Length: 499
Image 1: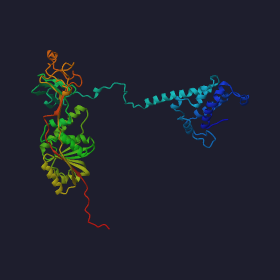
Image 2: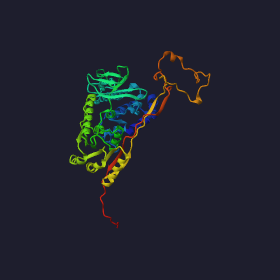
Image 3: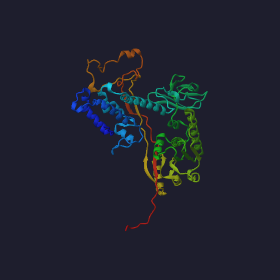
Image 4: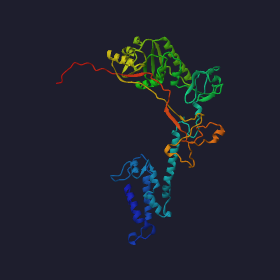
C-alpha cells in the first residue's frame, strides 16, 4: 500500500509508534496475523525511503502532482509548507525536534537501515550548515564597501581642526562663577592679545586645538576656543543695536523657517538676524535684506563676510553665500521684489506699519510676518496700522522672551576650601557617637598642615554641598515680538435670505 498524502503518512507513523513498533522489535507477533510475511520493519523501510524522498527531494517552485486525490495540493511548495517544510527544506525548529519518520527510523535496528536512510538522515544537517554559510557570505556581500568595521578603532581627532591664521578665537577668563574677561579676535602670525591679566602671543595659539587653556605673561589661565554664532553676534562690531539671539530664535520658530525658504528682512542693522536667517535657509534658500542707511548696510555686509571667512577656515567648507544686501527703503522697493514670493517676512524697524502695505503682496497666503519692536507703544501703532489700512493680517500673539540665569555651584569657605555637608537638625549625630562632629569641634588638622586647597574631585559623591539660587546678574527687557498671520479675506457678498 502506497500512501502519498502527508496526512496519511503522519497517521501511519503515529499508528506504528503506538501499536506496532514494539512488536517489530521483539518479534512477538501472532502467527495467525503474521504468517510467513517478513517482519514489519522490513516492510516499513522501503516505505520510509519512498515517502521521505517524495517530501524532501522535491525542489521548491516546481509544480507537479503529488497525489491523485482531489485534495492533494498541486504546487510542491504548498505541499512542503504543509509538511513543515519551507523553501525546500525543513524549518530549524522542526529539525531540533524529531519528526515521526525520524523517530521510527531511530527505533528500528540500525543494521536493518539501508544507506539511503542514513544518507537522508545526514542530509538536513548538511543543508543547515550550507545555509548558515550562505547567510554569512550574503551578509558580507551586502555590507557597504565604504562602511568601516565596528572592531576597527575610529580616530575621534579626524574632525578636530587646530587654530590657523585667520581663525576666530574667543578668549575667556572666569573667576568666582563670573566672566571677568572675554574677547573675540582674529588670529594672525605676529599678533598679540593684550589684557589687564597679561599678554598672549598669537603664535602660541596657532596649531593648538580649541578648548585648551593657555597662561598669560602674568600666569593667568585663559580658555581659548572658537565662538558660536550667538556669541559672535554679541561680540562683533556694531552699528545699531542688534537683535539678541534669544529673540531671533523665537522669531525663527514663529516664522517656521526651514531649508530652502525665501525670507524677506527689513532693517539689516548690524547683521545679527541676517546671519541666523542665512543658517536657517541653507544653501538652497535665499535672504533678501533691506537697509535704508548706508553705514548700517556696510556694517552688516562686513560682519556677514567676516563670519563666512572664519567658518571656511574652521570647518574646511564654505558658508553659503545666500544673502542679498540692498541699500534701499523697502517702502519704495516694490519693483525689486515684484517677481518674488516669500515664505516669511521679518521686520526690524521703527515703523513697520509703513512697510506692511508693500510687503504683504509678496508674502504667501497663511505665512507669518514676525515683527521685532522695542517698545509696547510701537506694538499699539503696528496693530492700529493693520486695522486702519485693512491689511489681511491678524495678530496671533505678542510675546516677550526672558531668560532667568541661575547659580549652581559648590559652597566654598572664605579661604577657598569646600565646606562640609551639614546634616539636618533632626538627624545630626549625638555627642560621643563615632563619626559625629560637634558644632565646636575643630577641623581636621591635616588640612591645615598640608596647606593645600581641598578640591571637589577629591571628595566622595554626595558629600559636597551646593548652593542653587537665581544669579544676581539678570538680563533685562530687549524686545516685544509680534506674530502676524496673513489670511485670505472672504469676498463681500450681498445679503440674501434663505428660502
